[in-house]
Length: 540
Image 1 (cartoon, rainbow, N blue to C red):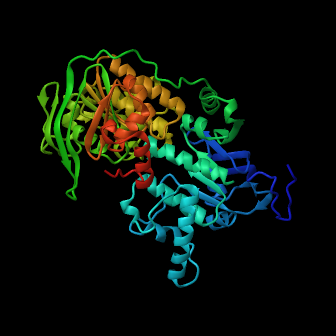
Image 2: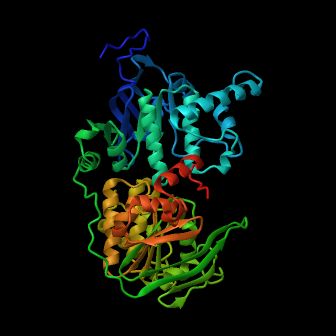
Image 3: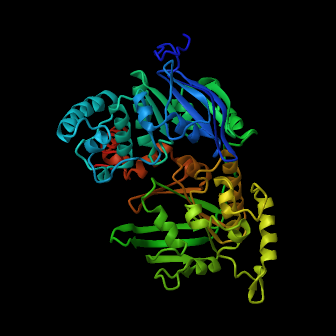
């Protein structure tokens, strides 16, 4: 490799990106500590690590959102100062965020041009952009209607718009942050083909993801971060998911869910023709019917926004519905008058909500206070008419020890715990109530690999005690690993039900895209082409 040149002249044999001794602290928290990494041009380089490992901070420094306390950034052999995102774009760096930065009521073309207009008159910029957009779309298989409104596009297509925005600004280095989090398997496969095409054209891709399977499938090299430091960089073909997990966590991790076959018993939950209409008059659940039995886990698969949240909210007493829901043969009130969450808890339903910070915890309250929420009228926590805070604190300490919550301090505010430990607090509170039915939404969203292993074990243990579990997750590998039966939701309806042993992620992905009978009129190839041109909104 040619030497770096302080004159600023790029060295074509140099890494596309080289970070040297990058450090960044936020008060007493050392987010990045003396990190050095080299990303070679024309490669796909993965970066993985647990929550709080410093991945996002490092990429934010590279893209100009943060300024490093120490260290240097080199781009194609030239040292660069990147004080803001405009400087990053000028250096040829583009970033596709997990949560897209698009104006919903603007067209694709307007979003691509936004912030990169040439002159006071917009018409010449739009005309130039339309031609370049057509060229980029054809060159990189990023087909998109330039006149479509963003609000009318599926998430897969919106993601392509973000990539086109970066390419339009002449980025040859692309950072993608958790790019498959909201995609169906077919959309994710198409994204990977796009990334491979970009790599063939000489583009450099930095991929941040927590999905080890994706790292193994798409990357050439992978760097592992732990506690703000870079622990290893390895060639992907020379490693394994197990080795990467151990490098991330610092110990061996069981990546599979170790569980015995289910022994289902009587029906605990029976749902018939359940419907929900939101405040805008949009029907979110369209006659959902399902059942969950003792000693089994029913997994609900689907892309986020297809009715899973509304299903959990109705069953958990947080939203009104129409239809029939029976728990242990007894009808539940869905009208809103007697369907509150407290009534559900008293009937034997525990609920781990999808958003722990908004619905599961009060972040400024202490851990022991959060463990009592929803159960503060439990006789074990009461002394006559008053709360027995000492009893609740003692019970919280027991739960913290059993569920390995760190730090082991019941007096800390919920916001002082990491995301994984916040989730453990919620799960400890709900699972320890000995429920007949556990509703659990996105149990490992934003959770470290080590905590994922523990949470999965606790859910399976509850099933093995003869309890019924209704699991909602957008992580298809989690659904496949944990579930005894799988129901797939699309647009508020159940598209089909499968046994994990008798299906595949591809088949489930088609159901998630709204295609219930592939043999009738769709071949796999036709379906993928359909998704590729519709951004996930299936055309029938």
